[in-house]
Length: 603
Image (cartoon, rainbow, N blue to C red; front, side, top):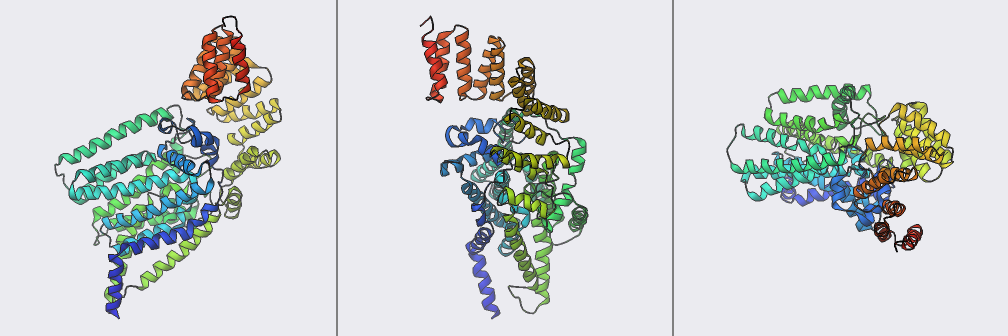
């Protein structure tokens, strides 16, 4: 009987596809439900829905790599591969179809789990225990947000390509072939353009090399790999700088110190992922538990075990280093986001498997007269997997749509400010203004200085042509945060409607100072300047609007045509009018302008 069990174990380990099928099956069992989910109106609306025409009709690689994650120069996030993957989804689905985006996230998560299985083996963990580690990763409730929330795509791509880059790097250290060198460089580059955290991967490479070699062996291929990585890093830095150079980060030293709580809280949630709220908060139990775990892991690293101290330090360093970039990002009215823990947790998981679970299982086997394939520790492990899997399945349902998110936050006592704000914006977009006011006023009751809620209440006032009231909301918003160009833009519109063109022009000047690459701002300022008689300055604004839109801004071409028409430059006006009509052939206003130009004296 014992021989049969051992033979069965050998068959499984020699056929890793069985392990992979189990990983795929369990992942699908938990997350296949998400293909029926809606968007939760948290960044999806700004990234996907507001850029629908770009993703479905006129997208360009240049814009992916030269704008921020929101495609409007509006954030400090640079995610070109994320948006490129969104474009592929939209192309395959012939539109922004929710289930396609969710399905892609599930596939990427499965590929990440499979990559982790192979990476753990590269860390000298047996296939059996590598499978258990990958399984624990797949079922961990901490990862639900990363899979179900579509804009976590960047973290999924980052984690996948980071794992692949490490597999290739370890292979490169062994065979030093040009092929593995190229694959290492390629996977690193893909990770880098997925999310900024990948900029820290070279430091992990160096630490891993030091742990394994302890001294430098001269080989020109090491310098070639380093040079290639440095070169793509320079390109990435330049493109990222161009994309977000007008974004002024609001992170302060106080924010950074507060963000340090992410270290114990991340540990707490990685090991005991009991949080069910979509928008969780720092709590005393999480901080205390995480601090205890940090001390325990530090002791494990220092304590002499079969696993070398350097290797254990590497695993802990993986966690801290890849969590470090998140400390420089402070969300408004939110303590932390779970998707940012997706990649850092790999280090803790490897440390747990190699220094705790494997030694315990081996010890139990040594104490037993029968070397069973299943030990009591395995039973405990599979019990944890079952509990985690069920929890993940239930937790995923809290992200089914915007309304289940609000319900879950209220039920599990999370931070409701974001959900109420998002639902308020959803109501505005769907012309349910009374409901929007209720949610936005709830936000102000919890946070009287929430400028986002004030801006949106101002928008509602403008919809009902209550321009004085709208200006009051925008004034309050700007008194709290005077670095939001949207508030200046909206206030400018309200002032324009009241006939206060000079003051409206000053607001657009302020908006453009904050965000210099937004075509809409230049176009609207050009219209104001033209109405005020500043035709030459208006022409410069229309030039900039066309330049920053990559010559795809129909209104800017049309307005420039009209400005040139007023200046008597009829030939140039006709040329711009034709350019605008190429973008919108059925535009009646443009067709009428073209007829006026043709009837001008010069024609």
